[in-house]
Every structure is written in C-alpha cells, then in structure tokens.
Image (tube, rainbow, N blue to C red):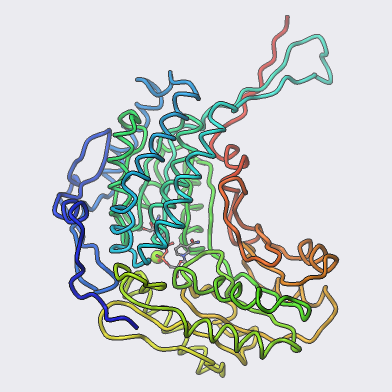
Length: 499
Ligand code: NAI
Ligand code: MG
C-alpha cells in the first residue's frame, strides 16, 4: 500500500470550498438548518473531519417542499419548453466538466474513491446521463388513441410531470447518484427535494452551486443534507411530495414504502444485490479473470450491481481463482488523492466494521480466505480485496450484500443450465448478473434464465445512460435511466373529446 496521506494536499478550489459554510440549498438560497445544528463529515482515507454541514430535519424538509411546490406550480419553470430545460441540462454537464478536477478531488476526499476513477467513471456518467436524458425533454409526448366503443370521439393522452419529488441517495457514488436522480426531474419538468447521504454531502452541495449557474430556477432542485431517520424519513412521509425515489439498502427501502403509504405517493427503489458471475469452461480466461476482478473490486466493492458471487466451472475454477487473486494483489491501494491509487478506503468506519464483520463471520462459518481478509493500516478505513472459497449457500457471506471488496467463489460441475441458473438465482436479490462463455447458445439461454434487471455476457453490468437500470425481486421497483425513467417521473392523462 502506498503511504496514506495524513494531510492531503488540497488544490485551491477544494480548500476554498471546504473553508466555506456548508448550508442547505433551499429555494435558490443557502440557509442554515432551522435547528442551527450541523454534523461532521470525514475523509475516509484518514478518518479526519473535513467539514461541518447543516443538519436538516423535518422543519427544513417542510421549507424545501414548499419551495419545490411553488416552483412546480408558478414562476418560470412550468412555462419553460423541453428545449429550454434540455439546454440547461447541457449547460450543467458543461459546468461539471469545467470543474471536473475540483469535483473529482472533493468526491475522492469525502467518499474515498481514487480521483482518477471519479473523473473517468462518475463524472463522465453524470454528464452523459444529463445529456442523454436531456434528449427526452423534447420528446415527452402522448398518443392519439382510437377508442373501442366511441370511434367518432377524439381521444389522446398527455404525459405530465408527476410533481414534487423527494430523492434520497446513498454514499457509494455521490455526485453520480445526484445527477442520475436530477436528470429526469429536469427533463420532465418536475421539482425535487434531494437528500445526499450523511457520509458524503459535499459534492451534492457543490452541484447545487452549478445548477444555479446553469440557470435552473430557484426551488426546482433543493438540496437538504441530513440523516436518514430524520431528514430522509420526513421526505418519505411528507404529504406534499408526490413521488419518492430512493437508492440504498433494502431495510430502508421497506421503511420508505411504509412512510409513503400516508399520501400514497409513488415509490421507486433501487436497492442492493448479490449478483452472480458465472464462468463456463469454454470462457476466454484472459477476459473472464480481469472481468470477474473488476466486477467485485471496483469502488472497493461498494457497488449495488457488484458481482459478489463467482460461480466457476470446476474445470476452470482453480485457474480463475488464482487469476482473480493475482489481480487482487496487483491493485494499488492508497489514499484517493495519491496519484496512481486504484482502490481507496471504504466510505466509513461503520462500513469497515460491517465488511470486516462479514469476513469474520464467513471464517467462523467455515469459509476459507484465499487472499485478503484484513484491514490495512490504522488510519483510514482500508481493507484488502478478499476472496472466500469453501462457502455454502446458507452462509451470510453468500446470502447477504456485503458492499465491500469481498468475493465468494463457488465451484459448479453441472452442465445442466437450469441447475446452474437455479443456484445463481438462489438469492432474494435480482439486480445484475453475468455469463462468461464463447458459446452463443449457452449465452442466450442463460440470459433468459437469470432473474435480474441487467445481465452481461462476457462483461459484468455495463452501465449506460440509455440502458434501463433496476432490479427484479427485492432489488427494487422501477427502472431508472433510458426511456423507462420517464414512466417514473410522469403521469399519463387520458383526454376524450366529444366532437
Ligand atoms: P441506507 O439505506 O441506510 O442509506 C441510504 C440513504 O438512505 C442515505 O441517504 C440515508 O440517509 C437514507 N436513510 C437511512 N435511513 C432512512 C430512513 N429511515 N428514511 C429515509 N431515508 C433513510 O444505507 P447504509 O446504512 O448507508 O448502508 C447499509 C447497506 O445498504 C450497505 O452495506 C449496502 O449493503 C446497502 N446499500 C446499498 C446501496 C445501493 O446502491 N443499492 C447504496 C448504499 C447502501
Ligand atoms: Mg442505514
């Protein structure tokens, strides 16, 4: 491991941002929390506090919802054309690119991702999602309908923005999650109250400054940092919110559904996964090995679609495991701001304890640690990329989402695709999966058998703004991105005219 940066050298823009106040962004204004409270946010690479942030709760959510409602119903926003909204989204993407170095550094510092990865993946996908979704802003249309029972009447549908949205996002890709959530709001003409995760509030606040610079009217996007059980719960329960979009744990997903029942607000959920990576004996090993390693070790395994269960045919199992273990050892782990770092720390002490706890539990249940397993250093929340074998399907390491760089490798010697798929599908989740083979017939058959929202062939979970993303089973409700996301942010109005 590279020497951790105890005192990261910050660029001037990041130092300036950190030196400022970190208030909530409500109705286009920067305001303290009503309670006056703040909370500390950390650099997970050193464990040090880097900023104090306004701690919003129900009173602030009330203010933000009132601002979002007013912006939805009056002022410039409802009068704007799709073209004007799209132009604003492109401007925002350009501003993100203009400030990419600063945003990447800030994200690395607050979340722990290596700065280069933020730029190449998170910021790129943030901008491309804004641009792709902007294209839909001018194409939100209904249909002309031929009525079955009254053919002489004129009938058509309109698609109208769903209204005020509440959006609760996690910490694993903070600015990208914010952009993925804001894009359909802006494209459809909704307004939003967005709560970043308490671990990583900073880039969402910087993004709010850029939204303002891009010309997004006051009240359209409100950013309210705060904790889940207070600010988050107030969003989920708020009677003035028409729809809530959540990304995070299944546990909180359930709470959101319960809270949403009050005013029957619409709910979309992007929850976790325990996605299988299935390597057949004919797979190209040189492709499958780095692919399987990337599937689990990217972003220190803190990825909802991570390929955390590796099923490899017994003929190639040892080769694959040795290959993935070698890849794990090659990864340069270090402070996210150190040049050349490929893997940073986990996001928080809590997450380090959770992931370490899973590994110990796996070991005491009889799993074998092939590589990794330990915390690295005493400063920051670093953990080694880890591979476990000799697991069984009942173990928590196999059943539950670990959300860390921990891979369970499982051997199969079956050639019956139904049996292989049955094992792969033996999970409450259904977010993603991948199949590694050169046999077209196996590939197509397996794609159909895997019960998951995204299936890769010789690639694990490629993310693209044009591709719908979401889960089967307990991995969620609804699809974000692509054209599908418009369904979550619009209502259909049927119009009949007796001529
Ligand atoms: P979490 O689900 O508690 O947090 C995600 C977001 O929900 C945060 O903004 C949080 O403030 C908010 N939240 C928490 N409690 C809430 C409540 N009662 N009402 C409304 N909002 C609430 O996730 P956490 O605790 O950070 O991580 C726990 C596990 O969840 C991880 O180990 C991982 O397995 C999973 N997870 C999955 C993610 C995904 O992308 N699908 C992202 C983050 C976590
Ligand atoms: Mg939680």
